[in-house]
Amino acid sequence: MSKKAVWTGAWMLSALLSLFFFAGCGRAEGEGDVGVYYLNKERTKIMAQPYDLKADQNDTEAVIEELLFVLASDTKDVEYVRPIPEQVKVLEHTLEESLLTLYFEESYSSMDRVEEVLVRAAIVRTMTQVEGIECLSFYVGGVPVTDGKGSPIGVMTNDSFIENPGEQINSIQTANLVLYFANKKGNALVQETKEVHYSSNISMEKLIMEYLLEGPRSQGAQSAIPEGTKLMNVSVLEGVCYVSLDEGFLNQNYKIDEAVVIYSIVNSLSEIATINKVQISVNGDTSVRYRDKFALDELYERNLDYVEE
View (cartoon, rainbow, N blue to C red):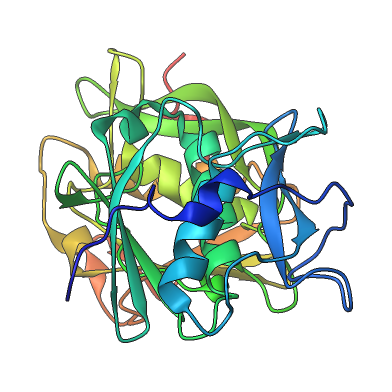
């Protein structure tokens, strides 16, 4: 596996962007060799423009270098923003079999969370159109890029940016979530409203669970869910939200009342108008009891009696 600097090649002097717009999962039929993805000027979604390659399409390395250069170049159309910001540099790339790995400067980490997701989506969707590239991985400062929780994102494909079949992760929206966390004593719930930016394709119940697991912002609150717990699955059927957590949920923190733990989840999810009841399971198993008091095979409804006034 050999590393190659991305800013080499005589084609750099002649690479020009096509200015005809189209949107969608891939390039428009008959319009350009590939579709290069850009951010819109509001930086809330990605859009594709057709682009005719200058490099020989049989020369994979040359095509990679050309597209990386294009992704880091401004267009003449003010409606579109280059995916790789001016302050973010790609130092090297490697191609091994069908995996393209990009190595970024530390400046990559300066992007906010919303923009970073869109940047990844734009780069991955552009580069996976190249013959022989099926997936990408990103490194910053020699270590894999991580998500908002510090977990490595890993290998990404075009499908990594699809939450629901047939739908794209094209747009970022804003919402105010009402979440319930434990108070400092662990004997009551405190309400916290959090403004979040999220993909239009992620379900609201999943979004709520992710932010519950992330923990509160306020100093007067703490996460009720045991530290290290991971979300396995969450879905809604006929008004019932089914939440499956991993075995980390059974790690006991007796400083937090068991009712506070359960209703942190139930009350937060019940803020969604379409959810009337919640069932919690551990790896899909509802036969266990939480601290011998709460049977997980039962459906729990919103209960604000535990909320601190």
